Image 1 (cartoon, helix red, strand yellow):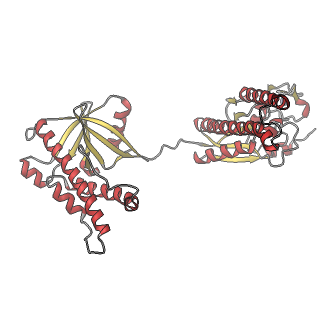
Image 2: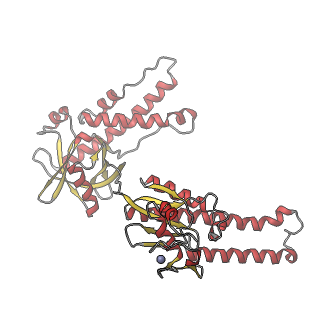
Image 3: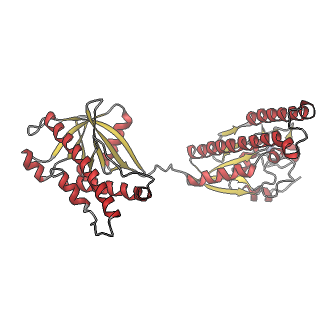
Length: 411
Ligand SMILES: [Zn+2]
């Protein structure tokens, strides 16, 4: 991943060049960058439209070099690459007439090759040393070398952490740009840097079990921890009540209201109901996105390497899965699976039979263990829990299917 962060720079006056002189030289360089870019753009254009007449392909490096004679050669090739990449992507649009030939204004940023940037640290302060001038420049300006050192001005810890990581090699800085901020009257660096996306450590033996859709949309438990999670119960009830009320009102108003929608055919009459259908579908989609994101965040935060869910193909007859019939449960499962895999979490589907009737504490299985709908009370050992949490606790056990199969007594 590549990111860019801005840093303001405070020039450390050197005997061969004071700040005022540095500024005038860099401003001149900015102007030269502008000229180089504009020359390249027009030369490229001429080459393409007059190719048949033998108009030569411009030598971009030579153009940049001739416009910026005193600039570090690494920075020159960085500029050349940058502009040719920009033109290549825009060229088709330009020739079609969808875009005009780019024209570059004043205050162009000065490109810096990654090798022209070095970091250092001294007495708790951070510095950036930039190679700005070529050998010709050093000679022309009477410098010791073409390098200038700046203190990095930082407002917050997080931005200095980036510099520290560049110093330690954890981040690699890339070609970047130096620019003058007229408002703040200060030079600032748009530093580009590369880093590996942080992958959280996952424990392959830790399983997050999900019970989806009986009484609450998601109940979750972790096999080697006492943590439990539940989401969404009231949201759905409230939404269901609202849409049912809307449906009822439409039904009542149709025959008497005379709002023009009666008697104009089936589709006209059904339109309001259809709109409600769409609203429900949208609500489900939004909720499923939010819940799946939430559940995968829980898994990552708790370093669960596996998510176990019930395989619900063929569950339609199951009496205890009331919620499933009204909610696009498969969509929720798909979204969870997709997001889990993107985070390196494995997804396993288990046989759903008896997961809600089994007592997590003693393993006793009976339909009579479920009482009063949302409560689980074990007939045998008295273990009492929210029914969905008990189910999730069962679902997160690795090898739960065999345990259930081998269970001596199934009522
Ligand atoms: Zn029990």
